[in-house]
Image: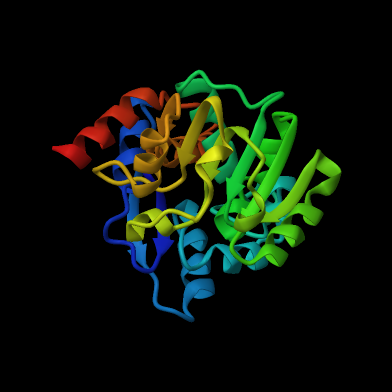
Length: 275
């Protein structure tokens, strides 16, 4: 019997996950199906239970259900525990519902493996203090940056996140208006501002010489943040498409015990966006 997998969200029709996981299955010769399911608000728990009690083997979770998945999981990985959100669900051999969060490791792998970057010893600035940022903090700090600054429009939220991970490294919170006089080797945009054609109000001077910039968002055209980074002389500018594929690859490996080749899939999805 073919093993079933799916991504649950609302809205979901534009999800790339079925294409990504189908490509992974073909390249690794795994017998599985993968679909996108739009879950009505208030029905998440029932959908998870029904799916995983049949021939469903695993689920990806996207907006707006990542916190619901976190609460539902009875066994959570350390990175999911800290993230406060789960994007990967499955049952272990004991039948327990396990939750993991692969967003952060997906982003780190994209920066380090795919782009040849380095986080260790670097001065890192992350923009935003919402769930997307919280989800990547532990994997970023495990790379041992020299320092990490979390900046947000509402400064108190940045301080709260910094305090949450303060035992993992040199982390501080800041408001956008307090960044003058500081510069960073890697700037990561974890806000959704780019999707609205906007960029967080940060000074151009935050870019160190040979700085890299990474937008967790992606689109067919360069995002607003990527435009800003290019215009202000960043050495390398990246969007989050590779993060999307790499977090999927990490989920796939958790479920199947096989690490798929992500490079060909990244190229395939990129071509589908621009083609």
